[in-house]
Image 1 (cartoon, rainbow, N blue to C red):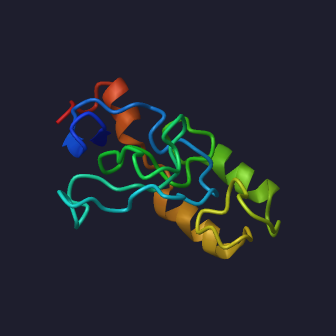
Image 2 (cartoon, helix red, strand yellow):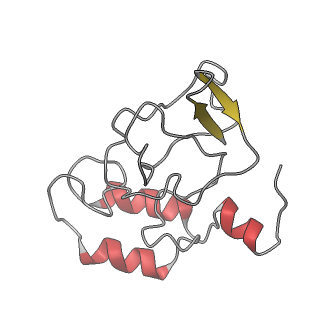
Length: 139
């Protein structure tokens, strides 16, 4: 994914991506995390879906993972959107407030719109899970 190189003040592409990238609360806003960078304005090589964990999470220096690195609706961060994620969404159904864990569209209510995000990701596996299982190799 893309990472900010503070020494050279530029974005660099790496073949190694941390599991903390795009692993934060899916209901948290991205803050200052970039949606695009000058070297990849159309997000051909990666896209931020969730806030990053760690020191750079929510900042303008937060790394951008490659596509499919994480899944927005993977609430338990196990690499697959499955019944466990549906159960978490159901547990908070119609809850309102900021930074709700299953509020995938970040509109401060867990409802049918969030269920649509979950069904879009249903039974998909994240890239890091497929790599760890040997299903794909790093690019």
